[in-house]
Amino acid sequence: GMTVVIVTHDPGIARYAERVVHFKDGVIVSDEQINGKADHQHDV
Image 1 (tube, rainbow, N blue to C red):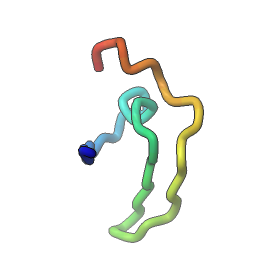
Image 2: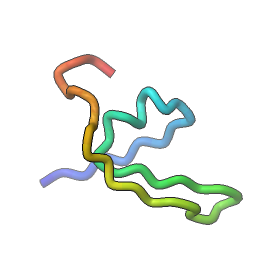
Image 3: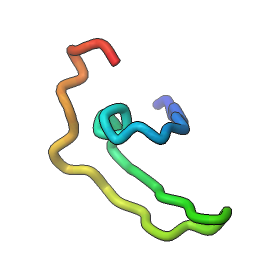
Image 4: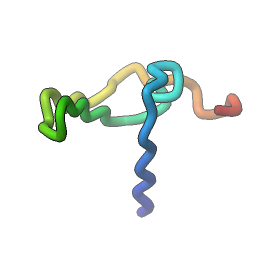
């Protein structure tokens, strides 16, 4: 398998992920598994 880590402030980019972790002041405030992720056939 392969793991790719993307850091973004753009929710449109984050919707391509299977998991989204939100940080505030260096602390994890939420960790979400995304079920209805975007179609990976489109360019990011």
